[in-house]
Amino acid sequence: MAFFKKYNGTTNTRLVRLERLIWVLIYGGLLSVVLAMFVEKTQAQDAGALYTGGALAVLAGAILIYVRSRMREEN
Image (cartoon, rainbow, N blue to C red; front, side, top):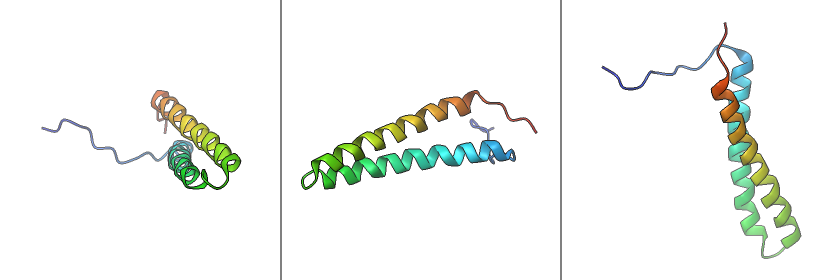
């Protein structure tokens, strides 16, 4: 008896693209924030833009996770 259903992904290309976009936004945003931490001491204005852009990308990814959870898979 398994507690969790095995998820093998979806065959719907629209949903696959959305799932890939979600993870690109989240990881890209987090990478941007970490890069901003290193740039902050030398170029504060550029670091502010990286912080803002990274935070917005992570937020967009989180919102898209919610949107994806509400979508149904239709084949």
